Amino acid sequence: MSEARQSLNRREFFSYLSVAWIAFGAACAGLASLAFRYSYPNVNFEPQMEFLAGTPDIYEEGVDERYKKGFGVWMVKLEGKLFALSNICTHLGCIPNWQPAELKFKCPCHGSGYYMSGVNFEGPAPRPLERYKIGLNAEGKIIVDKTKVFRQEKGQWDNPNSFITV
Amino acid sequence: MKELINWVADPIRSFPIVCILFYFMMKYYRVVGTKKFLGWSLLFTIPVSIWFAADPNFFTIITLPDNIPIIILIVLVGFLQWFTFYKAALNDNRLDQGLGPIEGLPENREKVWCWPNLVYTELFMIIAGTCFLVVWAILFKAPLEEPANPTWAPNPAKAPWYFLGLQEMLVYFDPWMAGVILPGVVVVGLIAIPYIDTNPKGNGYYTIAERPIAMWGFLFGWLVLWLYLIMVGTFLRGPNWTFYGPFEYWDFHKVVAEYNVNLSEFLWIKWLNTPMPENMFVREFLGIILSLAYMLVLPPLMGMCSYGKKMIEGVGQMRFYIFVVLFLLMMSLPIKMVLRWLFALKYIVALPELELNL
Image (tube, rainbow over all chains, first blue to last red; front, top):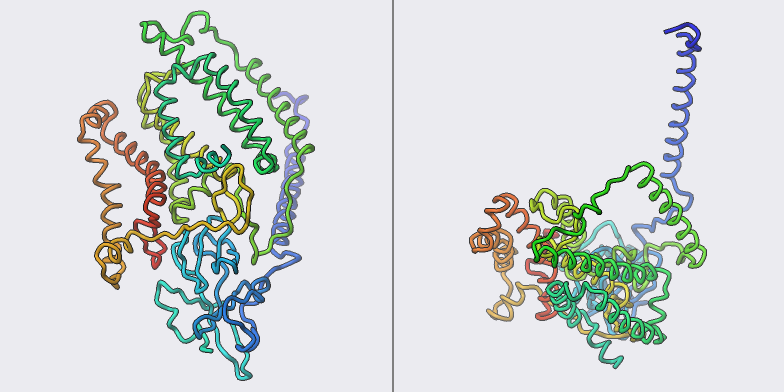
């Protein structure tokens, strides 16, 4: 190797190398900080998992949609029972619509249909809609707790926490 | 006439019709693959398409920005499929006369360099493709909707157009089957084709007669089970994923009785007239036996018949069984669809307790 072609000596090479590594490390750190920031969105939609749903006497017989948009829950009064029905289709997690004329919940994604009670009867849904824990507090208000679900195929709909007798 | 087309377009009727058309197309590909056939079919298709598009309901569906790629796809696939038949028919007629394929003639054996011939072509295609996409993006606005809301879904909620076949498949299956296992098997099966297929024929030239199983099997999966289902999912599925004929208005309140039941309910309640057993495995025993027989007993039986023996001799046992298992998994989709239509059968094995439904 001739001296003329060697434009960098060992010391210079290492100083360039450290600059390159620092720049590379800084770029990675910047990217990592962006990724970290990304995990804290500015707007966060997180419905409360527990909410007060009025008193039992405000509900008519049938499906009540007033808590669907905010909490994803249908309040259903049926055959002397009031229960909180999840609005997540058990097939692939879409949001079914309540169809008052046909008295059924119908999923727009694959056509699963459910009776007012939440039991599946058409389309590919393999099991009924889930029900959430429901109860009364000391003031007689309804508390719906979405952290606890009751599944019909496991025989949990007889659980006294899954409905209120009205 | 429009009523009749609406009636025929229902998958219950159009799926068998498409299968029969596929059968005749593959059997008489030498007739299909002629310029005369292309001319006549264009002469028939173009006025019919114009008549279809003149209907306001059909026109609304085909001009949705999401659906335009599928129109392009139908035209392109139709032409390319005809082109394949055309080339294959020419070659197969020559092969019948004891001649070699056209691609093997001395004047077609000239070789060129990858650089610059191929690279220039690719560069040009990249530029042309980008221009096309830019023009498209300007002409058709992206169908943006309101911000996502976890407690509300659009109706109908449709997947991207290339996944609509998969979404249509999900109507007949548990999400684990149609969403994870079958698409995975499709990918694995496509990767496995070069290892399963040891037939050296058709290498570098068009032919159908020399590789019938490969052509029939692949084209059935591609044209009937994938493209046909995409078309059904795009044009014939409206609000609530209900079937709507091509000339039908998408009425949100169309009521269709789609009540369906599991095989276990057929067995215990309808046939034996007894309540369902408590134990879930006793309850589903018939479906479990049938499914196991389908996947485990049918392949050896197929290996024992004369055609299977011939195939095992040709490709070996391992390849034969992998092929048969992949083929049976593919055929489980049409089988399940037909069972749903004929008997309103929901699941053959229904174990919602274990999130397992077949």
